[in-house]
Image (cartoon, rainbow, N blue to C red; front, side, top):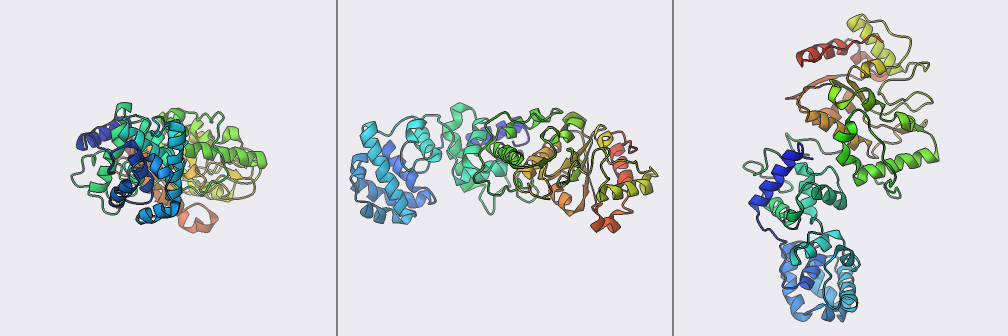
Length: 453
């Protein structure tokens, strides 16, 4: 959400105030004509549709006439709108149902609208919002989809999930006009390629996601075809993080991610165990975080991963990257390496030891990459970004540094160095990251770390 609920509310008020009583820009006289126009507008433009519909409605005056139309003739008339064969079939099918089931009148409820061939939530909302004034939901077309993400009103990228987010922000009494208002803003000001940010009524609160000077775009998620959103109880994220991230945990993409993790665990072994996936958040509660060390992927061999980046449980061999961290710790602060690799003591001091991806298939590195965890951990960083107290971020290697571009360096301290992996150890050794962290913590008003394990 854009810089918190207050900022999101301010955005809604300013958009509504700038485009009062906005409506969908299709030419129509009856709810049936609006329904036809909305079907034609899919992957087309309102301008094109408005050029086609006067002649179309002169030939076919009502749903009964459309139901009896010759599909080939209808296709030729609507050809300029694109996908003319599928649209003609949908219009004739919808007309037949409107006549046969609804007495020739376009229905006034969402459930009934969705029974009509070719009608999905966006089309249904267009008709219900604009023809009947029914607050069935919020219109999400390509403009609203794009702007909701760019402004920061939604971290989702599917129309259904974006609509759910907007319905949680916009007062219900304004649902019918907010979609059209945001569409107008997208056309007139916040254009796709060259937005007119100067003088924009919401610039002060806009997160400018993906734009220069704004927040980085949320991480992409690969196709999750065949993975069903989890319908059971969602995981409880400890340390106050559940409340901070609650809105996102209810989103479709997170439920799908959790469904993927559960399916993977049922099919084989996943690390870390489910009870330890969110250990980093348990040891470093949101209100206590002063340092973030960012890793990439959990360890993928037996008994290693336990929810903290770079860390392993006592009794497990210390991995190469952590051995190099210990060597540099001794060089930097003359602290001897311990005989184990458990970093819980660091985490309990307010160090969030965060992997970008929180799970992995056993013995298969990067197997859960691009499934949604990167987006989740982006949101973790965004939450800390909004915190009024400064946080120190240590970014080792190009992967962490790329992910760290979303950090507001005017509020927080970002330290960078080579990764402690054996592949880049020569650059890592001598970087003195631990003394740098302590100096940054002191400057930011925090106590330094006790690095001794």
